[in-house]
Length: 124
Image 1 (spheres, rainbow, N blue to C red):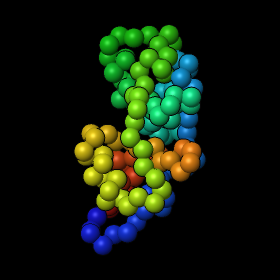
Image 2 (image 1 turned 45 degrees about the horizontal axis):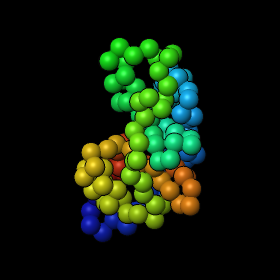
Image 3 (image 1 turned 180 degrees about the horizontal axis):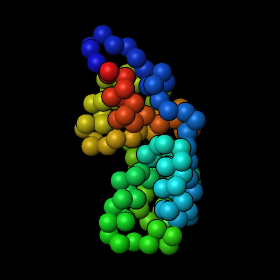
Image 4 (image 1 turned 90 degrees about the horizontal axis):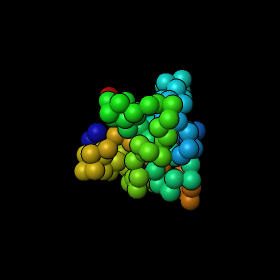
């Protein structure tokens, strides 16, 4: 990205937003991610939570049962969010600063997701 790039999140984000309930087994969340070819879901009624492939892989590595362990048991809470009008260079800086690969996009409500994959595709 060059300093003159004025691309906004709204131009790059993934929509529609994919969600999952907190009381769903992680196996179902993993299946949804696989089927939809995505790597994170916003958790409904989670108050700013997401579940990512990394969260699920961590649970599996710890030996947790994927049919008994619920999304709420492994989800990432209090995630940072971005607005649709934010510049892509600011998104890249936030991802680096917070060490995250996904940022939900919020405009009064959740409207999409921006990922490090989206940022990388935009750069190239």
